[in-house]
Length: 240
Image (cartoon, rainbow, N blue to C red; front, side, top):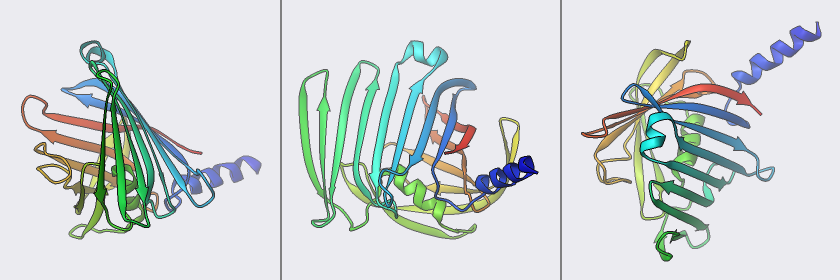
């Protein structure tokens, strides 16, 4: 009986309405090989706050050709409006740390970027909306929405260099297979590229499970030559 209760409780947690503390582990694929691994943790910083931590590391053959180790965290309120964020990025021979502090009364964000290789510091202040998200916070907001195919929303997102209202469009329902698991999903497109938030030409597609949990099981970044397509696929999910 105790085992049945445990199984029932676990099943409810796996499909409970988002948000809740969790860890998502991903495999990054590029040109049909494993190019990296990524993890994303969502935990409570304070009872009413959230902290999102993400690590992205190159792996396999790609790691031997190009070292990448990005460590990122953002602290948000309960609606995922950003309070503070930091990116520690080791990419090739470069090592930069970018720190964002959001002033919600003044509706501004201060960005401090340190180049550890060249010992240079760059500071910038920009105006933002009252509730502005970083990219991971915006993903969390998307998971709280109930957008059906054909619907779209616009979210204010910043990377510390500028703030833009990014359109997110629910495209279609799709059943996909990821690492042997079949998921019923809704496919979205986030218009982050093509001189919106990022200058690079490309597309960002996101597959969320079509249930209350809205688990991000797959991302696909489509760029031109020579990068091509980068796929990020869920390997494991733990409810914390």
